[in-house]
Length: 431
Image 1 (spheres, rainbow, N blue to C red):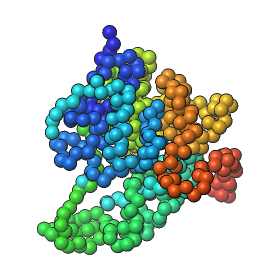
Image 2: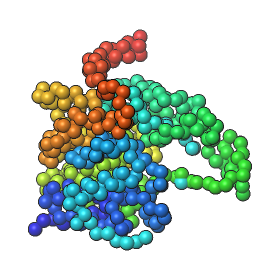
Image 3: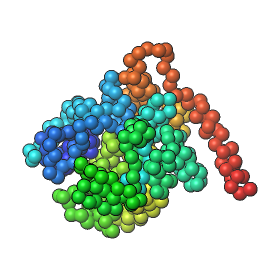
Image 4: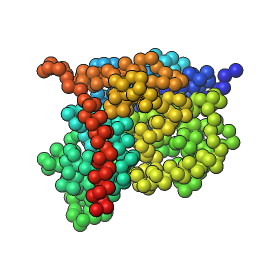
């Protein structure tokens, strides 16, 4: 008799969990309090108590090639950054194709003080930001360079589009890798004077706001408190996820270490500059294998030691208020190694150099984690090699000549010149 697994919520994480449980021969039942799947991406005209929702004009911050399920690409004609309605269509198609709907039970129960880096969705040569930024080569440089060099490069890159100091937006602790704000219009609105950036609010009067710099803004019509999201699991005791100091204490961001048996997995409670769908997919694949006893977890003490080590690194990189933040590629590779799905880059360079160049220097797209190992998808190689074609298709609606794709030869030269860069940095610093 197959083990039964309860899954709470039919959003991205829930759908990933259902599918991966089915792959492992488990029997999942997903409980969804609303009348539809999609979770946060299910738009509603009316706010529902106890349920987070998006607003009407929301578009994705991750491009389509970077936020799909690894064996289920978006249709070619979908735009690179999608309106929430398109993503909801995709999720419904995924659930239908993978026969997930029969495992879901629907229940009808119907707000800058510290500044921020602001990024555009459009980056180098007009490509989607994550197709250019989220690469193994870039991750390799960020992790191997001395921290002062890595911090300088990070701030320089964040200021490529516009200098944040000139717009009053620079973060208080600029090198911290806090999650940036994605907004293609904000700098233009500031430049045109339709938006003003002010420090924190000192106090409100009946019709005005007094700011910390002493300035006053009169005749306010309304105030919106953009306080961000709070996470809560009302069906669980707080001590299970926050076992100390109100910090999330989950092994690899998934498993509560103090449970007697590993029968509970939290899918989707991490933040990174990577997309949520492939993260949830890989988390669910590992969790399903743990439930199926084909993967085992370390002891409670070993898991807590790992949590302490990771927390120290997170505080250094992301700051106290971003302890859910993690480095996308490092995290995905770690999860992939547990189930044999981490791409073997040296082996690819020996056996398939064309694919290896795209995997290492190109976007770290979700297909990479279905290239090899259990759950391997035969279409993964072709999906990786054709991902730039699908990225350009919705934008090239007027033919002007052959599309130029990023050339990895220059990245290879950068890699080969890396030792010279380190030597130059060392000589500069110690001379």
